[in-house]
Length: 172
Image (cartoon, rainbow, N blue to C red):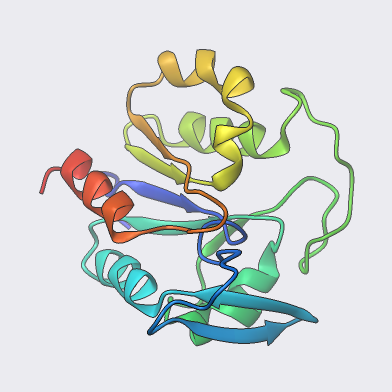
């Protein structure tokens, strides 16, 4: 991808996989690694369209690690072969390894590393846990206005309203 294409760091659970008590109309459900996931295919289609048009470069930042790419991408309508940022000590399938990190939250450490690796690129970070980790991420985010965070509600997941806000931030 070009150096001017923003990076979109994407979580799965609470973002693509909403913990909706009732499956909304048009949503899909599937079982992956023994877990039942529910998602809005119109949201994932919009993300894919952005990626395919080089509006953003989607990268996985999720406990699913490589399983997001291997198991979830195609059924959810997302491209395969995306870069995966996995928790240190986690193998290619995720869900294991050390929980401690320099910042106290391994995802913040990896988001910082992405920002340091690509200082010229804007970053959209979508993770439901950002709402719970606000105290730990606030100072870093304040110092990095080129990073936009979106913290969906775990029960609703990522919505078109969130994507509208991202699109506005990206410039149309």
